[in-house]
Image (cartoon, rainbow, N blue to C red; front, side, top):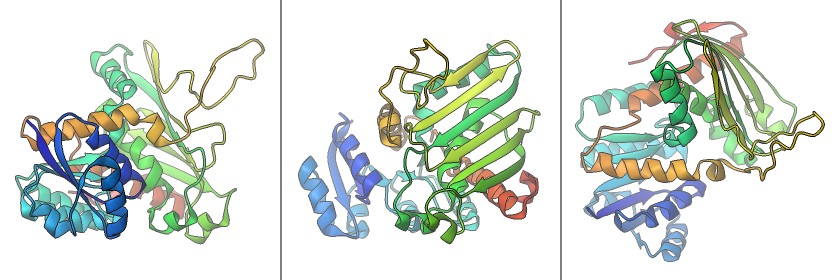
Length: 336
């Protein structure tokens, strides 16, 4: 089935999604819009796509699916519009900037029959899916320790940080979501901290450029999570699962953004990856292909607004822990 897909937002991730969508076989027509209509026209011209004057016109144009890729403040209102219009929707994370609004949206989606797929692309990465199978099959025995990290090669522009939500909500929320996906468990408690060694604009926004968290899952598994905006060796996203019978690692290949201190070791040989888009390009293609199945009614959403809420709750707990310098139980963070 050929599809007419609409996309709102042609910034960095939006333009990236537009290019990805234009190369997928099931997309017959791609229609884009943006508050900067000239930017939308530039992206459309480069891809042979159409342009809508605004979101209202886009949603009224007979879409089979709608992709929300605007800046974070636009996600919640656009998702509300899409649900009201009855259009199956893919929404980049986060679905909202606050916990309360995320809960409200989870309630709205639960009361609706409009499918919504949230863009946590790691769920479609081959390595993480292999790790999930290793856990589910019992291949590793019981899991006792997990290490997960999101280390950006270079920081974003200073203008991004005030609306990012902070490093736990922006970076580590991906680790929190994929942790739930791979293990099938929930987080029970967190203890988090952070520091600033880089640019002043992080501290000026109340954020940190490097963070760490110790999580305990509901089955007693210990999880060590880290993030930084300054990983000069390359973009480094990994997960290690240490079990009774074995250990498996995601992201342990020759693109690994580190080098050995041991003589004669030629691992990793490179080349390194330098951005999340490069690291997860196949996963981005796979998640948008999966969204087409969701929009056609052929499968349920593989990442729901409720999933996004649960990852957000963990991030919220970590931020509270960092601010108050104490352990925080997830039961302290309201949910739905």
